[in-house]
Length: 435
Image (cartoon, rainbow, N blue to C red; front, side, top):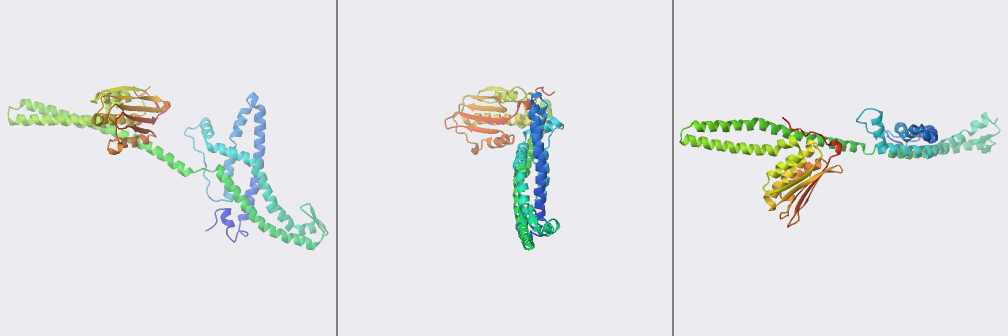
């Protein structure tokens, strides 16, 4: 298997005769070229932007300076492929909305943009001079020693040669000795260049490559899919409620009326008794169906929102319930539905298990959260693990990034609190009842 990076290549015996030493040289030399250009660009933008900031002309230049990491980061990710074939994912997100303003806003809010700006400062001030230093001592010095005999013959007329302009060689044995030493240093320098290029590439990858981009994309997709599932679930609930309301319920009403008419027309006797019994059973089925429809998705929640639906649930509770829910408008359907069914389950538990004489439902929208709290003065001791139905509701609230907490010490009181994130700009005016 072919090595994918300079580190892997150096661990193999054929490193010196492979292309990897020259790839390391190419990476470092190109770093010197790019780094010097970045240095000039940063200095130019900083000086011009700072000097003209007082007349506002320099502000766009300073903004451009803050975003210099973007093109430099792109170039550096491409340069990494010289010594590291491992893909380097782009850490930047694609803006949801088109246009320059949306693009700038997204880039300014990204941590990757500021990491790249830090890399630009480090690159322009420190890294490219180090690249140049490594190239000089790892390549230029050994090549100069290797070329000593050639310099002596071509430039010094066979009498002398200047080695690195600091040492004069005046005889051929010394010149060839320098050449042999240069070959040895060139072999060692190849490893020095490889180590420097590998370390340099590792630092670059750390600073400007995406961090856990695959995991981040999966988390985002998971969050989106959870939202889609919640919306699809609510849509299916409303469809079932509508079908039952407009279909099966109307048929049961018609059946009850038909049985009533038949009962009036039938003479007294066993037939009339059977028709009365059938009408009573149809009426019971109709009542159960209406209760089932209300449990699936109450029409009052769809038409009038969470406040009205909670008030309706409180009216149907045997224990007196005070409602103090204050909302500025309609909430997203999934949020309303989750909060409503948590309140209904809590009030059902108050009716069945608490022994309370009074309950209270309060809350509102504050600091980006929908807060709903149900309290009662009952005996306490509620435990979701014993089948209170709250565990499934807690899972449903967590899908919306919310939290359900329960406080129910023995002897009471019991307090159930729901917090669901819901920003103000998510509030909608859907308060008009449906026809």
